[in-house]
Image: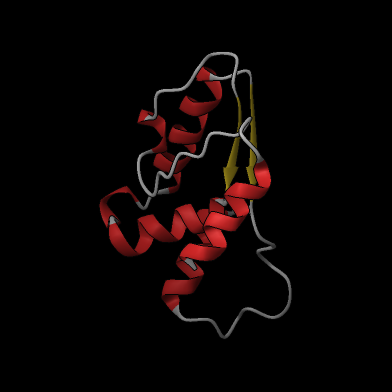
Length: 102
């Protein structure tokens, strides 16, 4: 996975700055004229769900995303498809994850 990430970063070129932020994206210092790509919302939410349960609340996640959007010129958020297929047989934990993402 490390090699894959490194290759992905190399493909972007020098005009990209990568900031790894598995938690608390609202506290990241950003330039006001920045264009920010938040990739990937689903990974970010799963980080909070499994590693920082105190922050695993939809309201808090939305607040952090809004904080980032107010600091920069443009914010682009990438997410996976959430409700493709049949999901009624998912565990309670997975359903909670989908609820927070939706």
